[in-house]
Length: 218
Figure (cartoon, rainbow, N blue to C red):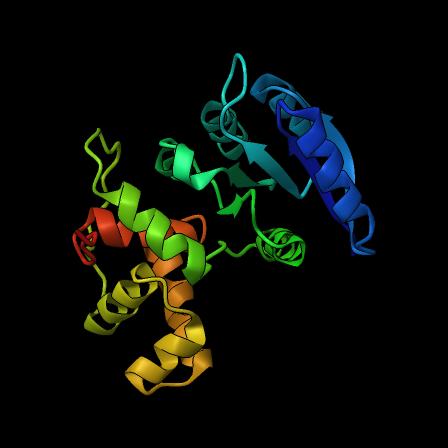
């Protein structure tokens, strides 16, 4: 099954480079390109792609607002944020808007393709090399948290799993930490997604920080 992708970036050179990379992948194709957030929203409505690779800083409607509109729609399109991490103060806002993961512009090309596949499969992109640093940087920033969730109805073991997810551990790492099987970890993660009404694993990480299970490093 081919993953259908829309590229949203105001720099044509970036879009061209990404398209060249994706063209070499037999299971991924670019079905549209957008230079603004508004164009990205329109393309999603008309093309219903699997994934949008979304830059944040674009003229007019930025990537955060475009992500919010896309994820609030009735389609199944997932958004991956494309960012220059060291210069970008808006990534956590994009997560709250419903982004399923991150791509950093200096990532290896194979990692970019892998990230697109992971998100298309319905999983949040939790790459310890990126996410731990990113989430810890932005989770403690002040600002309103609309619809703050509570952890009512979560068992003690689910608390433990959510805490480890929030620390950026993979399923295999969680299984080793708690001395349980990977299949059992997947079951707990699925239950947490349902109980907390979370879209994906990335949102579980956010919940772990927002509810105080995990504290940002200082």
